Length: 310
Image (tube, rainbow, N blue to C red; front, top):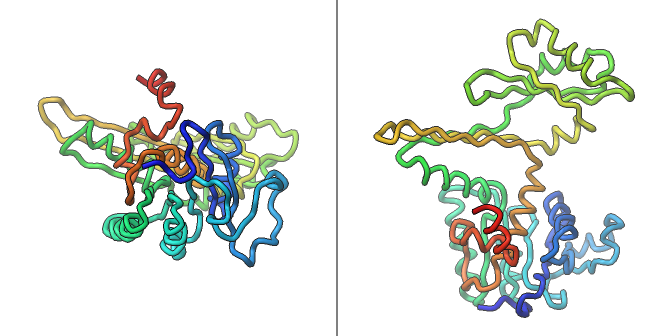
């Protein structure tokens, strides 16, 4: 099936539906893309008059994706409660959708089935769960399970800030704000991650030495990271450690470790854009990322990706 509006190898034109944190991240990522184009931003009628950043001055702002001329797909960046209705509105107008709802297990499968029925009815493809989790992390988990069968997998999300350690770091002269979290290194030892927002002109190495010398941090590996804004880090920062332990056997005891720290909105946006590249040629119905060939997520860049990573 050829996606609506798609012509040969033309760039894929996408509408961003919703302009919250993820919608804004998708729109900004589209500006940087060489093969995807931001065709329009879709907002609620009562939000159409609200000003957007200057970078979007030339982008059409509409109240429905069907109002966009020549659109190949819609990135749904609306609250979870609105996803199904918004998907229906787009699909009934022949517009493929990509969404990233935070659902797992039976709830995800029920959600996928509901969108699948609508997509089949209107003969249009849809991609569901194309975010960070589910989405990119699902692919990593699946790959780990393939590499270490019959094992156990453990997922640890970034722990909350340590109040005592954070309070101590804030008292160091030259520190405007601080945030301390703890993490386990690959060898199982405890690490302290201290993020510091510094006064102008302060030497970062001196601050790091002062923090590590405090009795509260003695005996633990302490990593100090200067940041522009601790408030932004608390709001946007995410972290995860994924570990797969294979069952003992003839091949030995396999242990796979994946650790990441990231802006979840940005990762979700990039995953949604990758999913959009797979739209051309997809059959009608709802697809998850695990249904798609990895090469399809690269779109026209697939050949280069294969040469780079194989």
